[in-house]
Image (tube, rainbow, N blue to C red):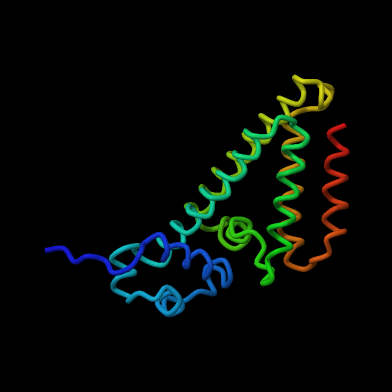
Length: 193
């Protein structure tokens, strides 16, 4: 007879995101996970697999939540420029409200593991493609409405915006000055004129 789990998998996964996000993959030991998740080592292995499998599930969970939030902004904001501004401001708020200065979990994973972990690299590439597709649709919508000049390359603008977001996420690890990010947002939006 199968034993029932006495914990909520989603809650445990949420805790795993926090642990990996704070300590990184290499800085997190199995004992850190056992202690931080509040489940036994055998339950951890039975439910999530090894440390790497749990890390991948944590990244997927983080990506799904962030992707949903981004798509919601893009799909529910009439103005393309306003949608892009909201994305940039969301990034700023998330970074400034993070007292631990963890940065972005996905960017941290890219820096720490993507160059030598194909599974993480593949996930990063899928995440970046999702972002690119969403922002590109907003830019093209803005060009169709005349809000963004057609003379500008939509894909190049999209990649510039994406690089700006990643830069903000990395910079937030060392600065919490709102004016710093406001300047970046205003300059980025001026490129759309």
